[in-house]
Amino acid sequence: MKQVNDYFHKKILVLGLAKSGVAAATLLHKLGAFVTVNDFKPLAENIEAQGLLEQGITVICGDHPIELLDEGFELIVKNPGIPYSNLLVKGALKRGIPVITEVELAYQISEAPFIAITGTNGKTTTTTLLFEILKAGGKLPLIAGNIGMVASEVAQNASEENTIVIELSSFQLMGIQGFNPKIAILTNLYDAHLDYHGTRKEYFQAKANITMNQTNDEFFIVNAEQDDTMEIASRSNAQIIPFSSNNVLEKGAFVKDGWIYFNTEKIMETKNIALPGAHNLENILSAIAAAKLFGVNNEAIFTVLNTFSGVKHRLQFIHEYKGRKFYNDSKATNILATEKALSAFNEPLILLAGGLDRGNEFDELIPYLKNVKAVITFGQTARKIERVARDAGIKIIEHVDNVEKAVPVAYQLSQPGDVILLSPACASWDQYKTFEVRGDIFTQAVHMLK
Image (cartoon, rainbow, N blue to C red):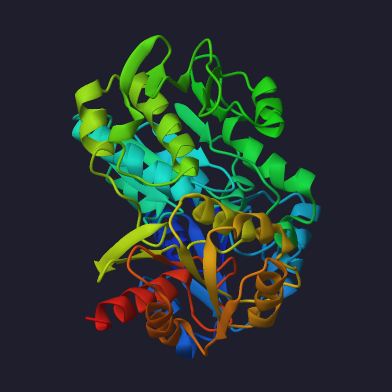
């Protein structure tokens, strides 16, 4: 860990806790800052805040008092989930107080270089896959970021021999200043999180921040099949490494005659890839490009891709029971992710879908429901999804109370050779704390069939 003096005796407000807020407050305290933590959850219910209080950190809980801005803070480290419409955040920016996210701290203290991955979909799969390939290639990677490992905690234990592979959301990227990865990856761009960002332009710009500090000494791996991603690439100062699953490229990662290439080098045949889904081929290509830039040999790449079958809750194969295959895609919290999941299969499908109602309809799913023989719905959006299923000509539509009850119903409606797919197209918060909880309950229900 680098010993930085930028925060010594500076007055800093950490706004919002969860894992990243606790890590940021603890690190800043260690670096000699005068830290105040402000979290909305009351202190009596806030175990994280109580722990920081025991460290001697000032803690203010229960609300976000605007009067805090009169305390002379020189910096705010914001939890990524707190929107910029928050009155404290708006007030700070109006007064010229910088607002960053914890990722910026991680970059400042890290002795290890970063490979950073963002995009609307595919971030977690690409991050995990690249981590596994680098590990198989003997490159001593560490994994961090939006995938569950707090970046500043990982960075404190990283050395120059390591490489930190980090998944970054648009929320995190809005709060960077000097963050500069050795390799940046932009998997794809679609409209998402507009309730947070307000506009498509702002969302895309947040994603573009991943390359904003890169120079010609760094690399930007980018989806060559999208005009929006290539427009961002045109503004980058990094060396551009494109990837495409549908077109042969002059350089970068692409598919030709059933083989994956990097530049002019054959890497492996696509038939040997264990990870299902055409959309995952894009994730694979971007991971291979980064691995080759780091000097990983083809044997290590083949070994991982021949066995890697997915990330938990991301089109995760759970079990085959009496000829039925069960897949957990609980991470599909938007329509696009469910479209990708549905496109991954040629077998007859039974789709389990529903969740938090954000006001949108689901008609975009209709072209992707061709192989779906039955739909089982739950949650706030159940009726909307049922209407779309009827419009798609699906005859078997069932409504249940929750995911757990959906599994035995799906099994009874299925036949050997069918795929039973949890891909909700919605966030989980109407019934479950997180998509991980929803996916775990689905998995438990599948195993209960036995």
